[in-house]
Length: 425
Image 1: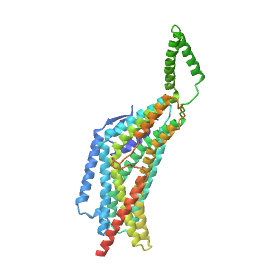
Image 2: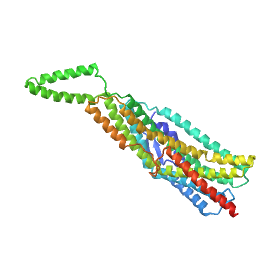
Image 3: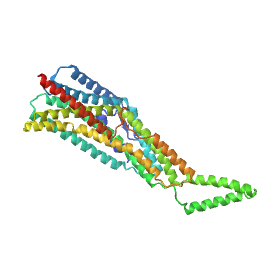
Image 4: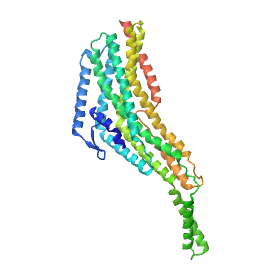
């Protein structure tokens, strides 16, 4: 199964949710421009911008669900954040559509090299099933959490505007979640191919004894060389033969099967490095904005958990308020956690490849081997796989510590504002 065949169902979903403006011709898996899908994306962006501006400048109470001033501000920022993330995700998918096309075209070329040059089956059918299961699992988490939030707030609060607020928040949340899933899938595609290269490196052995056939062929070529040099002087013969023998030895080294594999691995790694750069251009801004929105949501709900604990009275209402705020930020925490872990593992593949490269058995006196290993080492040093949020920061597991630290800082600030508001009243 080709990679595009395994992803066609997801591409249809992305078309429906404005996350890709391309129509796909299944004959050859060609990306075709669709004026209808582009117009659809533009229309949704315009409607979303109008709704955002209406929420910013109107005094309608549906944008908030709390009575105190700090609570209103927190709710308002949280709703505006998810709307902005929604607009940016769709706009980036439309503006950067050429990058998406390049990404999959390059991916198809890489898969052909794996299949034809290395005889490696990437098992895209298994990837499709695992991706579908992951998508259903994430969707279940979103649905269960949002339904629980709605029920908890309907029971514990008497605010009639919450249903409207929830709907205004839910729709952009699902689109942003799907954008995250699109990002996860692309990262896993890169990671899977890097892992295949690591496995291949661990199997390469350049220091092998020559096979009998190769030895016989070498002897025949030596005999033919001696016969052709018979009319010359002995000193000239030995000198010329030494040069030809050295040339023959180098040619045999380059024809070595494992040496060919190593050169193909170098080429594939370079292609995957370029593929990662395309990925950064296509998803960079949406990752930056979505991570910022997740940070806002996590901080806001931590604030409401603190407020509910402050007035906790061991009642069902208090319990549901705390549980609702806790469940609210679970999808956002899940997005950040999965993204950070996937990116960290993918970037770690460069280090694993470097370690695998230097574990290869080579003839240390063979200049040909040493040259190839040295060049590949320099390539891994200067072409590190790095995934960034539009170049602002690297996305890895250290991002989790940064978010925890920033959340703690801003939570303390919000609590101080809340306490000052209570003193003033």
